Length: 559
Image (spheres, rainbow, N blue to C red):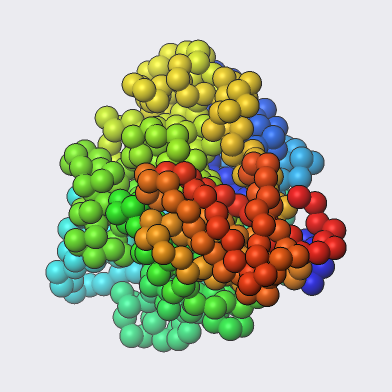
């Protein structure tokens, strides 16, 4: 393959950046972030080097679930702006070389959505079948609830009609009935509407729940005998309406089941999926100072179709879930990174950001992000990670990490000039407050975390083998070290990461290499010789990291 071929599947070597418009930048100083403010900060993202902007929900909402309880899938929350502002954002982002994807949240609506208000008027209302209802008393489903601190059943009694409606999440979020062809048509219209405005794809929320028809009666479920066929239809529709649009799916399942959501060997369902297994193994490895769990997870990834891709991350907008770890493993991570009850949520996750979890140790923070960007897949950032933002535990729940972006050391971190009481949430206080952590100061500091992120992203873009190539864990004797090799076409990169505090010397053995090869460091200046048998010894500091390009004789790649 040629490097130019990577442009056809742009997502395989992209860098994604997730943000909430409401908390990113307030331009009219009413206390709420808005689209005009985001447009003013696009050049920060370009300077950082990200290539794709992912927007959390900006639609009209009943404000019961931070925007995920939507009352109009075609609208824009008036606090954030207008359709014209969205188009201006897309146009300006595209001008800067940024693609834009948005959340597609069609598993459920708000109970304040006009469709649901109509559906509960009577059992024969035309919109009744847009949701999932049952007339008999449901069994105990307390073990199926997603938010055990808020709900004890996935069914809720509607007093007026005397029937129960399905809600996999909060009772204020009734599930849409995708066995109804009218609902499926409406979802296609939603996809078509936003792509017509220039959107480059969607992050698809709660995909397994969307396709789950087990709550429907037998007659209803029979109308959609192949739910995955419906997901293929959405992908095909998106392909027809866009040039390279993506479906990035939230599918927190074991690897084998995730493969089904890609469409298996055909790769005709989701374009990308988050690697929840690898993320959770990363935290277990960090807690133990042992790279073994992460190496096992990476080697356990199933092979996917060439067009498919994993999205890697160490923090996202929800709780940092640890649900795929065993209970003893989860307790290890809790003890290391969230020992206090207020740091934990749902008995399965944490509501913290990475720097505070690592005690603010810059060596460990940089090592983890170096690791993230060196792994095969597409790295995904949550806003504020590039400057090392912390969380605000006093807010509680998932909102602890959804605090206003910290631009300056000034009032409200430069997010807004409104009174603090007008903001969507409190600005972080303590050691990670804006006076200590902000974009403006770090832009001027060549040794800042922001400058380090720029370097990582720049090097990442120069290494298509990380997004496209084969992956191999290299054998070496140190349990704390992950050594891996990514190879593609004429390029190969060795990455070393020391998860422990002690310095080590790592021996590596590279098949097909000899004394004519060199290993060239990409994050610092320097080279290392390879002997005639393809062996080299590489020094790593405690929590150290190195990226090394395998330089073959006569190579024309820039170092």
